[in-house]
Image (cartoon, rainbow, N blue to C red):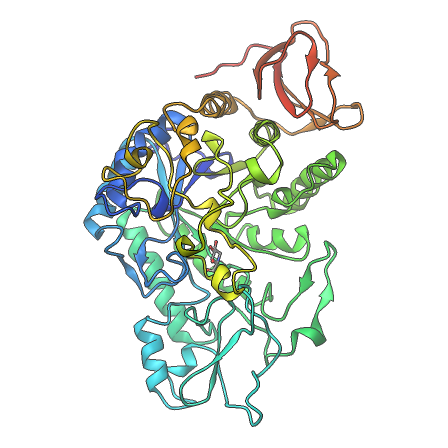
Length: 518
Ligand code: NOJ
């Protein structure tokens, strides 16, 4: 168990951080929505799993148009999740268990129910309350000011009642803040301090690459180029100006004791541009989505993604982060085609240098729920696409804890804001076999240090060593022989293996020397 009173090393460099999607983790008051009391009660599961920290998705006051990523008050807890006192009690309990807590901060946009946006709508065009957002004059032909598109689909502009347009890179209920406004900068520095003073260990910064927009709102079609990874370079993402904000935030984090940290949710056109977010005077980490997006039918591409992420982080000295699932993407047990391959991928990820982010339920082997009824769906992506894109509800279904309990132990009343599939009884935390694999891997992982060194391997096989650990991943589609060597011992396998053969979609950890598992 980590000792959080030990301030001697940067804990986040090698941490295993568990994402809690609060609405779907555990419901303490029986209303079918996960909350902070439910989370506090289930924290021992996370301690026993062996993670170092939890990241909580937004639990602030919100109309919940986008699951809480539409914040109407950054300094209060939404009543559906509890109270500030519940937060404090949960934080204290986590720290008592040796778990650090990082929370989401959502600086790119507020909710349209935020007091600032209400004031902006009441203000006159050009007025000071409008200057905190991106308002543009009404157009003669009634078309939006430019061709920017919302990430959730449709134009990124909506008209206010007086005809002016406001920018929202996501839902119209999420107006983008204007970070050229001193009010905005001062307000967010206060928000960070509010939560740091309460004792949080850090922040996950939502849309950390989006806060600054190109001057003059140039059309995306005109400036768009193809990035090295094939990603568009857009006038509203990854603008150089965001780095000044992150540098200012780093100074605030460093002014607190106890190794407070921040991880950026940032999308950049190249690993090199992404690495800029983790320069020594900027944020501590950035999510590495290249690994998440790798094509697992192409083992060479998986290896290339690992190499490129490690190499891109080297010049800035930041630890690489690894993630396979989160609340925005299809769960990897479904995305990769089978639980066997998903567990092989997890065991590979857990052997890599750097820190890992796990998404709640992956330790149970949960698949994506693909057949949610239309009337249950809540993701704005579903609504804005007119139902053509199912959106992200399928990875947000409340967790099963106990096979025989109402709502599988998620809520004492049996309520659940999204329906749980009956077959999840077999995957509940008290039944799942995958959870033992994660526990063992997270425990052994604590002993791993050192850089990654690849071995020559058969086609479709990834084979590398870190110190005494050899990790062999068979993505070749058929069985392969296990490497042999004196003293080599398979200590962990992503599924049972028999003799000297490694089945397809299986990862093994082989220790050539004794490694402590404490
Ligand atoms: C990224 C978050 O992870 C996602 O859930 C949210 O919809 C968008 N940012 C907008 O805040």
